[in-house]
Image (tube, rainbow, N blue to C red):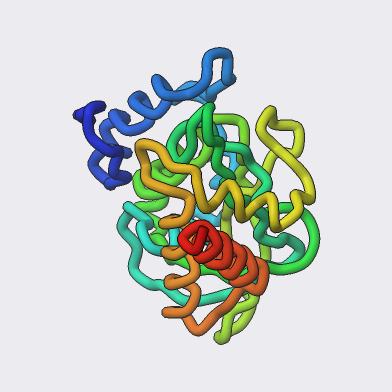
Length: 232
């Protein structure tokens, strides 16, 4: 069970028993719509119905899944999803933000490309293991599961990932990076700070030999802001 007096940690066990999602749900702003456990399972079943049962399943991660997948897998490699770009486009008032200092979360939005990590899940474990990231990402209506094409060194890979729901209540399109950096530099919550999330995302990409110019620019602006505040 989750001790709600302590920072929340995303672990495989907490996702399996549902305690993490229930604890986060209780921290959500009043009136925020959330998916039920049955709805999340239905989302997974819909995705797997479009995949051969005997084939392993690839999952594409572009944020915290890269450094903390919290599921079992048998292979990891870098790749670049085509047709989607990484964007700070979701407001956060819980998790890594608060109503007083809202944060911003990454999502894949339409157009362009984005570097990230591919995880191969064995076919006979797909339902059990993929249910964990589905619970993690789909408990609100901010994200939708989607099959995407990912360019990898060994060739293109068909993978499932989570893209932004543009009709969701927290979606914001094309935020200025100066404004993004102001929120990333100051927002934090029970899952940690937005700045920690940014550092971990950049480090994960670097470990895979990949990069993201937008994230580098946000990091530069956050550093510049911190230096200015310290000087003052």
